[in-house]
Length: 257
Image 1 (tube, rainbow, N blue to C red):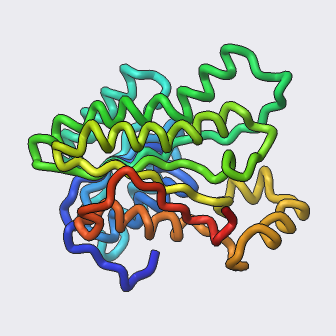
Image 2 (image 1 turned 180 degrees about the vertical axis):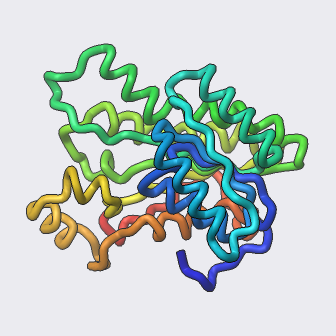
């Protein structure tokens, strides 16, 4: 995060982040906490989530220790219960960041109906139902911001993960339909579309020498794309500074697409 980018409207704002324990999500939680927001986050990884909340709670300058709830986002009842619990701790959420996802690699012939349904649930379905859960509070507050995380993977015609790329392409359609439906309530809905972000997971599992060459050829900007670059865009869209931005796709990929 750029330490010079301060958004006064994020101070004390209640912000919900899904998939916030590691990777891009952890950077989002940290960035909002450092802005003075009341952050609630959900993740299946309980140990990492608890550790992140504790670390940020002890960090100088963080006004509100983030509130964490462990839950499976594909379990509707558990997910809704976690959102309700965090709202009790943070207040009604006026910013939602639908970050949780899993870019699991699968061959075309390996996809079963069960694999398909699980992939859609992890990468798309929860985004709609999280919005449905927080919108009543946003209406009472007089508005809000919903930020859905997409991916450039389908734009680049990447293979080897057809469920993920299908779901991520649909995120942008979801954003536009929700933006129209919720606009009269002064609720903005946008998509942040990351490129290949160098999280620990991506480096450990997927970054090969061939992948590095793809990045070199594809990105106009030759520096690594990092989680804080995504967080900087998300902060802007959650803040009042983006008051008239809705139904848009904000691509952060170093100029690849």
